Image (tube, rainbow over all chains, first blue to last red; front, top):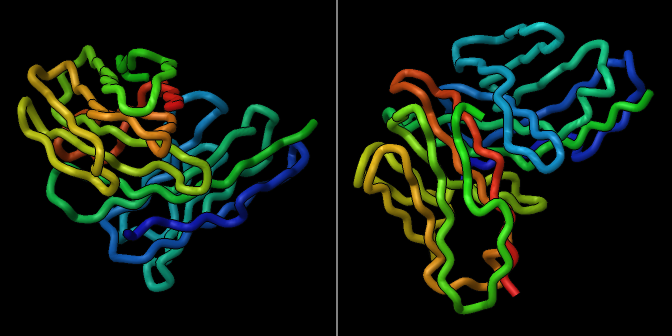
Length: 113
Length: 113
């Protein structure tokens, strides 16, 4: 399995601070995605970065990808209480059009006022 | 939730009984997926479908079967439920062939006693 590992498992910060979470994976990928999951809900897609990209931004999110180290990081700037959730990375291998995703174990982010 | 519903949302059953979970989508997307989510494991792919009557196994398919007799419904069946199948089950869809983002349903919480 090329399941990713995420680090840290849990992160607690204050509102306004930046949150950084990391993802490592094992095999070659086509792209890497980040998802957010609020408690008791389904996952919501945040951002996708392709294997030939090194950095991508979307609003307060910044994702980096280092394919040589097989790792990615997600930075959330100026965090808000509403950012409290679990965050998962997911890697997509080149398996034709079915695009199966392999998920990491997640980082639980708690943002306090 | 991209027009994805799951039923039932909660179920309690006994070991050895058959259980069927339903995923319904309203937008005729070709690709559908079933995952289970367990603490410490993230999401793991059980089965997926790339069209009516076209399905394939995922990472943790043992003890599960699926059927897709029409585009909008993807059924997951536990032939004889075991306590190890207690989990939260998520259905997901992928909208188009060349897009790799998946959209998730709200989940079904299954408890096998």
